[in-house]
Amino acid sequence: MSVLVPITLFGWIPLVIISFTVLPPRRAVIAAYLLGWLFLPVVTYDLPGLPDYGKWSATNFGVAAAALLFDSARVRALRWRWIDLCALLFCVSPMLASLANGLGPYDGFSSSLAHVVTWGLPYVIGRAYFSDGQGLTELAMGVAIGGLLYVPLCLFEIRMSPQLHALVYGYSQHAFDQAMRGGGWRPMVFMQHGLAVGLWMGAASVVAITWWRWAGRRYLLRVPARFAAPALLVTAVLCKSSGATLLMFMGLAAIWATRRYSTPRVLLALAWLPIVYVPIRAFGLWHGEELVELIAQVLPDRAASLGFRLECEQLLAERARQQWLLGWGGWGRSAVYIGEENEQRVVTDSLWILVYGRQGALGLAAVIGMLVLPVISFARSCPRALWRHPKLAPIIALAVVLASYMIDNLVNDMPNPLYLLIAGGLGALRVRAPGTAPTPRPTAVAAAR
Image 1 (cartoon, rainbow, N blue to C red):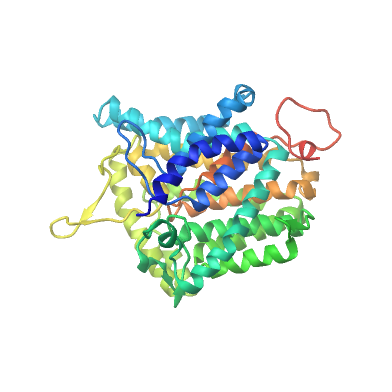
Image 2 (cartoon, helix red, strand yellow):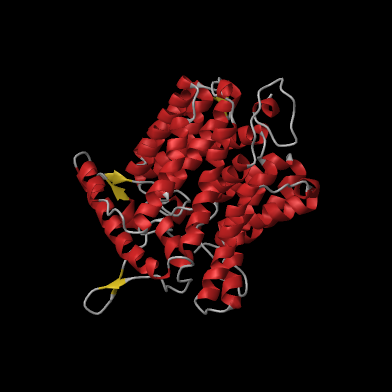
């Protein structure tokens, strides 16, 4: 491990604080999260009495400290809404799970504190900085630029194999054999897995293409959008993540349909998919054989992988249903072991089954609401006449990205704080047409003018 690892991680907080003195606060937040998540090393330090310290917590701590020091008025101006209860409940649910399982208040407090740092802080920061049209538009631009920064790095690793993390920080962040896909390489760059890179590049492509085709913007980071957007799209496909590629094209189709027919029905369908899917799977009402058979007709190797995941989820869901309301808590209590001597641990791939086992149906409902209700709230609040408005297009793209992220969590667990920034901002947004009477709530089109 290179000496750059502790230098970058522990030096990131003061660097973020300094950035607030040279950049406008909102852009300092975007830069901190983009550069931190895209380029800091994948490692965590176990600090006694505190949540694990890594790129996620370093960025959250840095932005929170800078906001309190240089932008405290914005923090004091926060006004909470009912939709924020899901984030609060998700952060409290580990405490309830620990107490229900006799693990004690200290275990519950430390588990909840970890959730506050990793989930609660970026959500609150999103509420504070991106709850209006201008803020979300700037965040959309940041997502597109972040994807553009990754294009040459992804292309390098697609050709040369995932080795940038090892070259810079002295070690590989994940098992190298999982980077081989389809006779080539799947890039990991500085993220935790190639699946996370594929999902990120797909999200950036959705935003960039929307920015170019439907928002009428000509440049991304001084690069003509007509070149930048296709480059992102091609790179996302070359990342060889079939699920992320499918979500990318689904997202683009949803944006096209939303604007073409001036209705959010397709966007709402994406948002409602996890709400319908998870309870059916969690309570054992459907095992997924039909879905595996359907995918096998097109992608046999991906169908085998999906079938394995669904079988594992079925075993884990049976265990979770034994403590269905509040879950089993931590320390591997929700794990399932198979084999003659219970020597093999069943793989836990998806976020929803992980949360269901540890925090029960209460925590599961909270995390789904945290990521999905902002999309539904935005879709229901927007007047029909505005769905074709070019200034609304980047915000629609962010809503699609957030809905797609929750869908990806049905089969994967690839955390990224930028999605939580979107959730926090989008959940507080209220859209009104230009020229209408202002309201005390944040607005989109009128604020983006």
